[in-house]
Image (cartoon, rainbow, N blue to C red; front, top):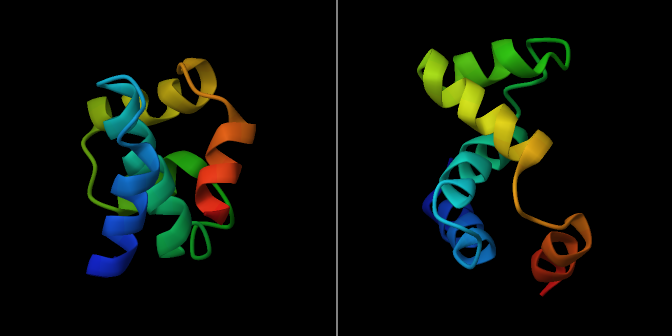
Length: 80
């Protein structure tokens, strides 16, 4: 990921709850990095390909699945 991408993700996610923001950062970093392409869209192998530990992969998926965030808010912030 480039420094610009990292700054955008940090700006986007800094208002979320601690823990959720880091886990979503890992997940969204995987999404924008293109790690899903060589893994045929599979989430866990793509997360692993970004260098995350097994525990960090589970936290990232848990944040997406059960985290305290709203898709509409993230999309609005992303557009800004």
